Image (cartoon, rainbow, N blue to C red; front, top):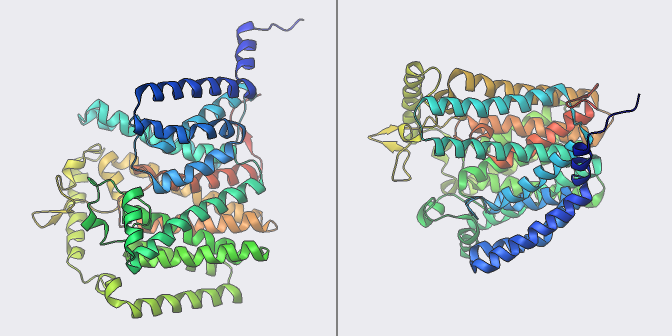
Length: 474
């Protein structure tokens, strides 16, 4: 029997082949250039800097992922056409991934990966429903859902476009390198060199969000402000430590990892963020003691000795009293937990993303009438905003990530690169979770940088777990 061919399907397949995608994208780029020049708008013309790279991004998607790193790390606050620059690259990569899927009809997803992605997509729909039920303006909660979805695309594209161990190593080392640049600038800010503060204010601050006097009380590197900077560092430091102590690298790579580790660790200390520093150290300790060796134990002792030395040399700069929990915010945090508990009991399915109920408005203060409005806890915030269902989704999300990484570590001990990255990620997520217990950021409340790490974990799950399954049937 002769097979029936649908002409429309054949046409779609041919149009969506990569070479046609490249030609179509080039034409679109030329049209965009004409529009920008016609408008004569300097701000929008900034996109022209990135346009020559777009064709290369389509040919080498990994290049696009790497280019997106400094945009997320250094320029998260800039909007062009109401969208941050990194979104353009991620949307382009997502478009290319979609075209590839339409042609190949398959994507390899491990059962852990499917559950992780499904949980987050379900969470996005949950946020829309609960925000709508609580009367939050449609424009506001729809924009929030779109931003959440864009962060998901960061992880998806990372998972999709890393093809082998060589590309994995290039991606991870690039992420470490870009983070180290921001960390080095943070160290210079801590020392007090004005040039690096000015550089940070030029590249990394929206004045309405972080006034100059506030920005200089805590070093932010090139991040938007100090708290996301601490999140980034507390994630990267354990990852570098895991690779450095497990993978037997050649001299050049070994020195690269060692230098970046020292820079990022010193910057982490210089943030003066209690939860970030403590979480980073706990992540390192977890990695060092998962399989104790003389090398790891010696490294840990040296690190703790350096940390104690620096703290004692600069006691005032590090504000030791904060680490002893003797400052005035500690009792306020307890009050915040009590207030949050009452709010949850009154709204067990969530109040929606109504920030005005929990945050001070019109100022940068965390307090109103002597009480802390925010519980400063990512998990409790999810419990407040999206109720018990959102909270359970967050727990399951981390459960499958960590469980999957542990299985990868156990089943791939002969592959030192995969073992090192898996162990580093376990320490990284462990540190990130601890830091999230004292701050409001997290993958469920928009953190695109963290989705790079989630994307790496998804790649490992899809390629280094047994019996991978296809999401789309051939």
